[in-house]
Length: 403
Image (cartoon, rainbow, N blue to C red):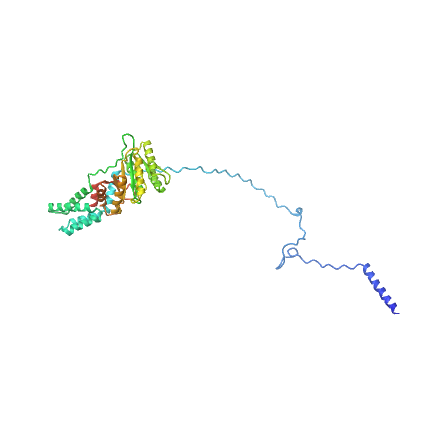
């Protein structure tokens, strides 16, 4: 009986298996899709607003076109041409002040700057008693004014002699006596004229201007050109200071202001060559005078002083140099005498230009430098204005001292 039960069980299991293979299983039910943020409802915090990649999109045919807007025609922009380059205006030619007018102005300035010297001497000489102590004070006053030891002793001795002979001494008498002695000390008979006339053979006069650095040498050349232009002279400037480009530019500006040509060379060029070219151009232009500016140099620099001598020798190939003007700063006092001595030995100075004479009460440098070199002071500068340079006149200078 047991085997019968086992067979029945096996048969039932086989039937169940066959039924499972034949009858298909019921499909699982698919849950509905969740609502889509941004499509089925407004997105909230944590929702992704981007549409799923499988979201159906509209085709081109379904997208409506924007309305057509008619635009007004844009006028063509005018063609703007770049402006033509405009040449800078030519500098206006100035007319320098006449010499006579500037002399009066310089005399007034000099009288203000030199008052202490003149008043000091007059106060001492007008004392009731002129004893040894007073005469020593007169000497000190003159020495302080840079008159120099020799000229001071000479002047005091002559004054003492005249006082003894005169006897009575009023203030006006002493003033006249002091004026006469000062004029005589300065040397009214010295030739102070500038040789700036053209030579009979057509060669222009040559004026070589020398001096140390800082004396106002280039400015003096420019001012001297103005003086000559006011005297109806034709001038050519030579910028032989090739060590400083600013010097050549400065001299060119001075020339342009009065309509005077300037000959210049490249920076570092041979100064003698530039000076020679200036003289050549002056001859071609039939100028009256050629003014040659040289580089400032210390008197103790032998090489530079030799170079200055070379410039003079090159100019002398065409004829003698008419003037060698040494520019001295009046405020340097006795140091100016050392400069004057060395320059005179190098290039044979023929005249002196004293600049900045209004900046010192030591007007005695005029006497001292003339005695040192034996050459006259020919020009004086009393200011920074373009016309503050004038011929030196001993009588006017002394009158300004005693004003």
